[in-house]
Image 1 (tube, rainbow, N blue to C red):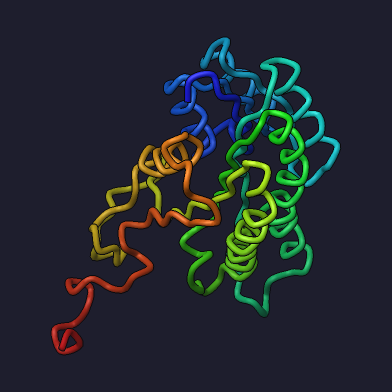
Image 2: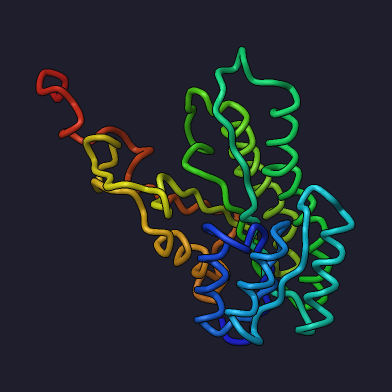
Length: 249
């Protein structure tokens, strides 16, 4: 990753910040796009001269243009994009408001569309690159109460594959990452009985970031339109210990 320039959306905190920190540790230069100005500026300062914060609303085309221009002005090129910004809400489909539905799709899906639309010309100027769209395990299955989020994550998965077909000829690869349950600052002790995960635990944030790092690096040079599922086996089925004995056979 040495010398590569990567834009990470939603990069001021959470998983986006974990991606950004690992990329800088591996030698990349990172542009952190986020609406959280104070947190974004502080985090970029912590990362040092290899990081730049830009205020960015991923639903606004103008903000995308500014983020791309800032990357090229500060670091010369844009080699990669991590579409990490996302929101979610819980509501049964009969109680989900149209306003919340539109808001979730605007950030999670339209934001990814606008990002690829803005980044592809810059990556062509750089001679190629890699786009990593963060979807979810919920982009592979249904989940009650997460209707807007599930729809957006399935959309990211499909959009990734279509964009990969269009971008391949210009040397730009487009892939998606599908995390399952990930530990966070408020997470309590989690195990495979409460959460039916075959590996028996939630992911550590860095475990997801390493998949992102791989897809951005030259090590994944023959992968495009692919999806990496980082869910501990959550989407392949229930482990035996989560099932009553009579249901195993």
